[in-house]
Length: 253
Ligand code: NAD
Image (cartoon, rainbow, N blue to C red):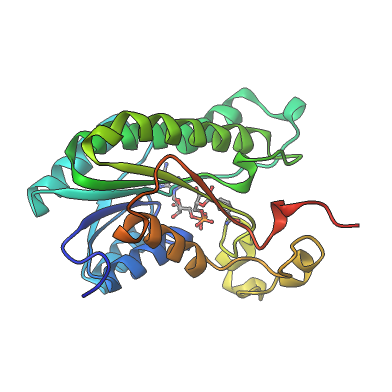
C-alpha cells in the first residue's frame, strides 16, 4: 500500500521543478494527482505520463480556482490534499522594485496560496491536508529578493491561521521552507538545454554557503511534502519545515 492510497491531491505549479517531483512521488504512493499549472503543454504531458489529471490553473485567479475545484469534484468526487507549490521569484533591491513587479509576486505567491486555501478547504475531506510552499526567506531576510521574502513570510502567516481555523475539521496545514533547490527558479540555465547546465551545475557555488555543501534536489523537497500530506505527520499542524542543508543553522566563520 502506498502512503497516499485512495487520496486525491492537487499540486499547483506541478508542470516542472518541485511540483513535478511532488506529483511523481504522490502518484507513486497511490494518490490520484491533479497537476495544476499555467504551462499547459508541459503539465498536460506530465499528467498523461503519470496517469494523472491536468487542469489549467493560474493560482492568482479566483475563477480558475473555482473551475479547477469543480473539475476535480466532477472527476473524483472528493479532495484530500492540496500542495500550494506555484511560485515566482524576482530579483531587485526594495528601492528599485517597481510596484507592478512587487504586486505580480504577491499575486502568485501570496494571493495564490490564500485563494488555494479558500477554494479547496471547504471541499477537503476530514483528515485532509494542505502544504504551503514558503521558503527559508520566509524565516529570515535575503538581500535582493524583497518582494519574494515578503510573500513567503506571508505564506507562513496564512499557514498558521489556516491550521487554527481548520483543526476542528481534522484538517492539517503546514509549510515547507526550502533553501536553494536545483530547479529552474534557482538555476534558470536548466530551462535552456543549449546552456550546458545540468542538475548539480551550481553545487560548487553553494558549497561555500550551505553546510551540507550542495543545493537541494526537488526530489528531496517532494519527500517532505509527502511526509506532511500523509498519516506519518498525523499530529503536526501549523508548522514551518526548513529543508535547506543547514543554511539557516547559523553563520560560519
Ligand atoms: P519552478 O520555477 O521550476 O516551478 C514553479 C512552477 O510554478 C512552474 O511550473 C510555473 O509554471 C508555476 N507557476 C508560476 N506561476 C504560476 C501561476 N500563476 N499559476 C500556476 N502555476 C504557476 O520553481 P520551483 O523551485 O519548483 O518552485 C516551487 C516552489 O518552491 C515555489 O513556491 C518557490 O517559491 C519555492 N521555493 C523554491 C526554491 C528553489 O531554490 N528552487 C527555494 C525556496 C522555495
